[in-house]
Amino acid sequence: APAGPRVLVAAGAAAQRIAEQSGCRLLRASGAEQVRELAGGADLVLLDTRLADGDGYELCRRLKFASSGVPVALVGPAEEVSDRIRAIEAGADDILSAGMDSREMSARLQHLLRRRDQLRQLESQYRSALSAATSDGLTGLFNHTYFKRFLAMEVKRSLRQGHPTALAMLDIDDFKACNDSLGHLAGDLVLGE
Image (tube, rainbow, N blue to C red; front, side, top):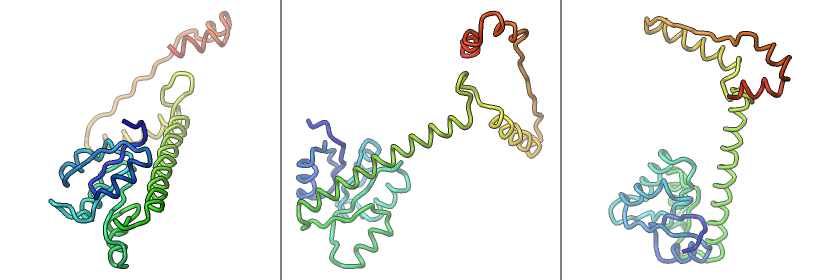
């Protein structure tokens, strides 16, 4: 089996063939329930607008609401403006026509996969930046700025709910002596543990 991106296909043979030719691993679904079950493990969803057991537009809407950045391309009639508008309103990342030129369909699939990769990279960078902004690089513990914000939220919550708030602080006795006698690198190692 190819080691490419996982594409969940609940669409016609043309879409399946193009996804396979693009080096994708296919996850096949025969209906709406199976699509919902498999969508979380996919990198891209190709979804027919007319499913045997449901409406592809509505399923697209539900997937986009529940998914974490998995692009959904609807496969169906795209000649009429109303069809394209309905796809956009459902949250589709693209609408592909079953009669579309195979090179165009392949280019569109590759574009959706590249956008998905870019989004995942941005999410990773965001998580790293958030971690750097809220935690100490040496110990991995939350920093003073985060502590002040969190404490303020907890005090407000305890007042709102009528629960007491407690705070315990810890100090390492004579830690300066450790740094002075063993050096700051050794002190950092102790803090890191």
